[in-house]
Image (cartoon, rainbow, N blue to C red):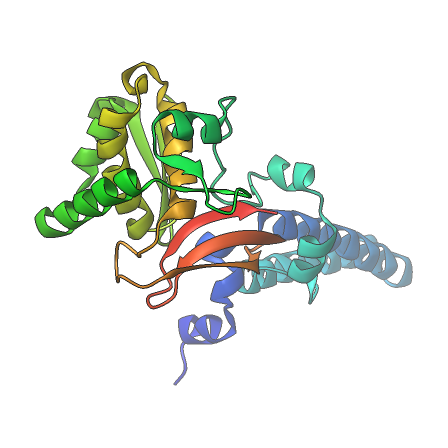
Length: 273
């Protein structure tokens, strides 16, 4: 005999419930359930009696709430409508940041700072910036060392120059973000991105004349910018490739420009378009 729990599980939609529940969808559908129950209750009261109207309205509202809990919505296609028509400011009211992990924005000029650190120079064609040969060699050497010796979050704490009590990590799939005293200081799209930053930081510490004086947030911006120039994936050795794609969360859809490893799909860099 099929139990009630089995029946509920069969109708559940994991993509819209639990951690994936869309709070704007839930709010909209709860409002719709309330309006529907009032309409049914009012109609029943006018046809039969007030008591039957109240019972009808409460029943409709209760059943609607159960459906919202099990399926994530009452009205079909609500998640699609939310993604298409809800503005970012309204999603933020419900704690749903369209970017999931907020990019860190700072006031420094990353290109100028990296040129000062002899990490970047004008390309031979004169139209762009490229890694300098010396920085590439040191970066490759440091990457090889980290692959050999391994990495952990303790090294990240030293990279940020913050003690363990002030650092908070926010995970999202393969990506994670570090915050110091509530302020985001770095976002890593994957373990490969973290290894790239950790190795580059060790090199910049000796090539950037003012590295020790830079704020934590500024260091994070320089390191994430350098990932655009990495030539070999820190995880699989594949060639990083640039592309654009559509990213979906439970409540939003947006375009991103990204750099990913061609062989293992590890994301090295991502920014919202």
